[in-house]
Every structure is written in structure tokens, then in C-alpha cells.
Length: 136
Length: 136
Image (tube, rainbow over all chains, first blue to last red; front, top):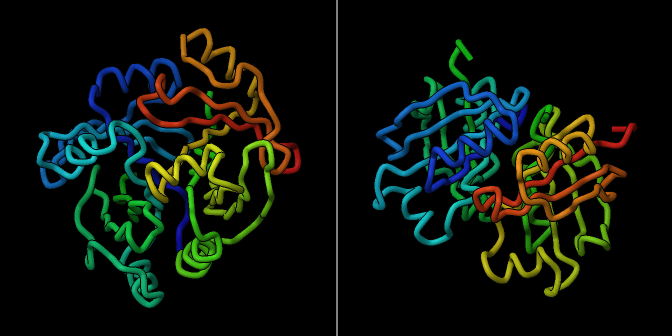
């Protein structure tokens, strides 16, 4: 069902400081930067092999990542698994009885198709599945 | 410096329920199970492509993962990046001024060499670096 870990999502308060850490100290290549209004974040992708780190700065306090920062502080926010066929993966998860936040895929960063699973049904882990766009 | 995400570490209260989710519903293959006394956990590794999910059940409340569960509940605990040369990676991180928990590598799961970075120096993310054993 899943080909690899697509990315780990990290909630940050200071995006420039986070980029300095991941790009400067960890040597990861910054490959994309995008404001995703529908998710209320400015997001930065860095490559680590075929996986990515996604840095997430909330656009305001009344956003999912803003509320996460207020309650838990900066840190790991979610994990995303990559699938070649998100519709089929969602069918499989539904058949397995996994509770979904998104019953149908929506557009995520860099033109990907994404869907979130409910953390209450995933052992407290906010879990995303991602089908990359054809370009990536 | 890092070849890929080695694994995401997930703190769990009920290891059997977590295995049912990751193996049964997510279709990941369980490849290893080990009690790591030095880290106070029973750990399970599942493959997802070349990456892994590491499920962590604390051996008692007075362990790092036990304290994590008591304060934050089950969920994402750490992320680990894979490196082919952990000594060189630690030198690079030290040179970049990154604060380390482990100044020298220690033995981790499945005979790997591991070291943890300090979350306060990594944007709140408990970050591990891993050099797999030659067998993996």
C-alpha cells in the first residue's frame, strides 16, 4: 500500500531558524517553498534521499498548526506515507476500518494528492497519505 | 550527510493494537522485535519501502518513553536519519554547533550504531542518527 515515508511534518515557530538547521547543519537541500492557504501554513520541503522533511509555519494562531504550536510547542506534527494510487489506498484503509479525516483526496503541497487519517484511529499519530504529482 | 529517513519512532501504550494497525491495516511488514533494555523499550520494526516505522512500548513508567507517554500520550516520539558513517556525521554536526545527547555512538536496535541530538537544539524534534549494521 505504501512505497516509502514521503515526509515527516515539523511544526516550527521560526521558519528561517528551522531552515538554517535543516539546510545548514543537516545538509538537506531545500527544494520547494509554498504557502498552502487551505491548510493555513507556509511550508518548506527539503530532500533527504527520496524522503522529505516538511517544515510548517502557521499563517496564524487559529489554524491547525497554530493550535498545535500553542498546545504542544514546536516539534513533530505528522508523518506522511507515499502511495502510487491514493484512491486505492483510501479504499484499502476504509475496508480495514481506519477512520479518515479526508474521505476523498485533496490537493496538497507541490500539486500532490493527499488525505489525512484520524489520529484517534492511528495511535495518536496524525497520519497523511500522499500521491505525488507526476512531476515529482 | 543523511541518506534517507531511517525511521519514525512512535510511542505506544498497546503494542499489539499498534501492530494490528501498522501490519494489518497499513500493510507494513513486521521485520524485527527486540527488547532494548538500555533504552527501556520493547521495540518493533516494520518496513515501509527502504524506511521503517519503529513502535516503542516502554518497559516501565520511569523510562524516557514511559515519561513521554505520561506527559503527551501516544504518538510520534522521534525521527531518525540514516547515515553511512555515523562518526563523520557526528563530527559534522559538532562542527555546525548542534548540541548532542550522545557524543559518541552507542548500540541501538538490530545492531545499529545510533546517537541522539538534543531536541532543544533541533526545534523540539528528538532527532536520532543511525548507521545500520552491515547486515541491514
